[in-house]
Image (cartoon, rainbow, N blue to C red; front, side):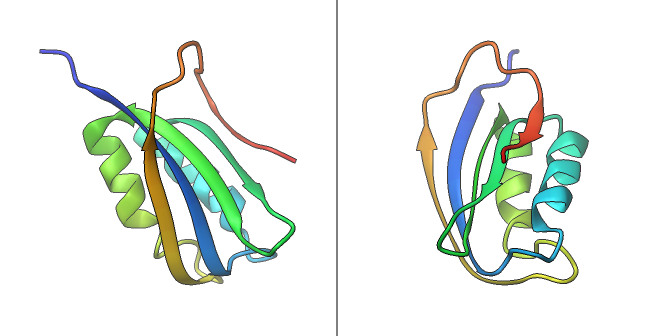
Length: 94
């Protein structure tokens, strides 16, 4: 039985820049076997897209509000997107 692929776009609000949030997100995504990306936005938020099997994506969504040890997440807004083919790794976008 194949697992259904899922892709999520998320924006994370709070104290999430300059606190290793992107690096920790990268490490968590790799642990869960997800592909996608994470980046800082000019307004102080962090934006990410990640995809993989439904269970792993759910675990990532559960993790985002906790974030890195130094971060203080106020809220996470997320929505489902169509999966992207050919994406094989998770990266930090600059």
